[in-house]
Picture 1: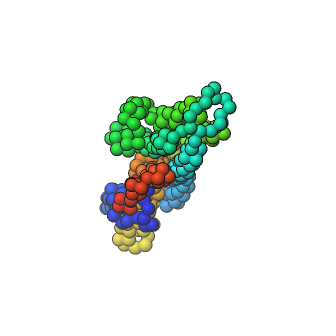
Picture 2 (picture 1 turned 45 degrees about the vertical axis):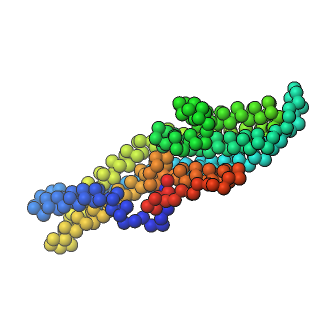
Picture 3 (picture 1 turned 135 degrees about the horizontal axis):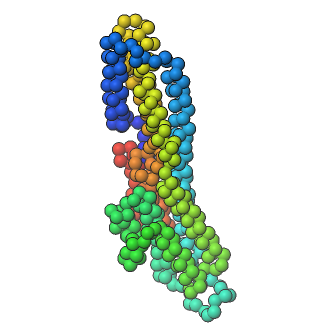
Amino acid sequence: MYIRQNLRWSIIWRKSWQSVLFLTLYNTVVCAVFASGFTQITIPWQPVATLGTAVAFYIGFKNNGSYDRFWEGRQIWGGIVNASRTWAIQALEYITSRVDAPDLLHEMPAATAAELTVRHRRLLYRHIAWCNALRLELRRQRAECWDTDVAPFLSEEESAFMRLRANPPTHLLRRQAAELRVLREERGLLNDFQHLALMQTLDQLFVLQGGCERIKNTPFPRQFAFYSFVFVCLFALLLPLGLLREFDQLGHYMVWLTVPFATLVAWVFNTIESVGHTSENPFENQMNDVPMTALCRTVEIDLREMLGETELPPPIRPIKDVLY
């Protein structure tokens, strides 16, 4: 996610130079052909202006849909951060000592402080692993980043098992539910209300994970994205043909003003179309995507601090004004 208030000119040029160069060359050729006497290539300005209006409306419609996908992705990850804190608070405050459970068939010894510490750490670390695993699945980075971003928060056996699953985040939440059952039925550390509350938080995490997968696995409707590109190209190609006679009426050699003005207008339309295109898939680890790495680090810092740890990793810092 780009965090600087204004785009640097180097970024604008890097993303625009190819289209600007092509448009300049094309418009120059059109003007040269017109100036050489082939005035039949001109077309009336009114149809071109009408087409430009229609294309502007269409691009606006498409860009609204693209931005909605980005904003929904950001809202989902905001929900993940909040649900992560809820999970940590519930795990730490509910799993404190043995509770009275009338449905248990035998008496159980109270949990020791050491056992509680281990269980708290395992539940919270597994959740940090879930956040990172979900990020890696959305970005298709499991192979290269698992050992550094997920494995440190799991046991070697659990990490090896999860790495081979088709959907590791789902199995991590399943393992969390299994541990809650053990805490409820075998150790008596959770009563019915506490167990239900923790399971509801897991359900919320499943819903948030499903929202991310829905956006990732459902591409932006190609009929909208493709025709938007086609219409912009068509408008850019017809634009100088409509401007030639308009500038030619201003005086001798004024027709060459078609080159800068047609290039400028076509570049604006192309840039607007490109802005919408970059928002279609917010989980691709690009400049304008949801900063999932930074959000995962926020979750890690919050949860490890709740465990009482003091040696915490630093927050993710932007790289060249981009927060990943």
